[in-house]
Image (cartoon, rainbow, N blue to C red; front, side):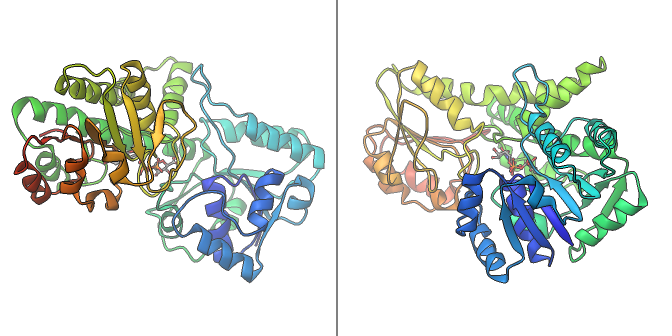
Length: 426
Ligand code: UGA
């Protein structure tokens, strides 16, 4: 099948290489600078396995790049929209990038018969898009096909999903979607567009709610001397609950959970419904970093001029994405308390924010620090020579924001003089 993908953010580019790998003829469209980078075989998104798959598809010759709507869609059977849908300051979803695609389609006077929306959009958006296209004389079926990729494991998640959801209103579009995903072995749920649009929001906000629940219980564990790792293990082995997304820590970050949660709250408000579970989820998450900073400051007599080492800048391991990363909240609070921040991250080498020095190695970061906070659970952080790390520090205070240091390493550190280890929820 001939598929054109608009938008090559991590969802669009991953869909492009994976659909090409499945044997489709794919054209990815974006602005000129991005297209040039992709044409010269350079992935502009850091995602494990992406560069290799891009090279493979470029060699096979069934992945193309184009910056012009008319030529990119000329012979397409399907158009897949994967542009950004950020949340505006008023809580509403900014659909301007989708509207822009629509305008370009109308101007080109040409639209493939199937338009697949992958961008996360509020309930009812696909109905409006279809009516809009039909109104302009473009007879396309609009379907909603949510994406459940996680950054850091996006290619694997695309190829081996737990489920694929088709929100479509016609048998013809369902048949086309089934052809597109032929080769992927996963249960397919076919439903109406509005339900599919809500499935995406409900999934992300439910996952966020699980994390906030674990973080709320972590606070209780600290107060009562219990261990959150044991509590969540005991809870998560119940198959009705499941073990995933119950890791307590510094809170969730990234471009999806907070954005989708705010957007769903706004959707509720629009029809006069409050969504208290989501409000509590956001409140608990918003308190994680401030609480951690209070803990840290209580260990120092005076935070002014102290040096803090931060391990992990991106919002999670295996990505260089810093959007909505808990690190940014930490940085802001540190600036407020005049704490000098030195950070290290395996893939983020620069931070476009003032008040932080990015070190070349974890040991350089640790040197002369008055405390270290471990923010993301990169495997290489766990494997550091932690005895050396604390010996390099001015004051050996270690806040393990993800509970990842093994009991053996912690026991070893406790044998040294003056080490303070502060985990989460225990
Ligand atoms: C999330 C969803 O997991 C995907 O299914 C969805 O497709 C994607 O959003 C999206 O809408 O695009 P992602 O944001 O890439 O994926 O990353 P996650 O693995 O979900 O992690 C999100 C945040 O939660 C991270 O900051 C992570 O550290 C945190 N987290 C995760 C926890 O604090 N505890 C956990 O137990 C799990």
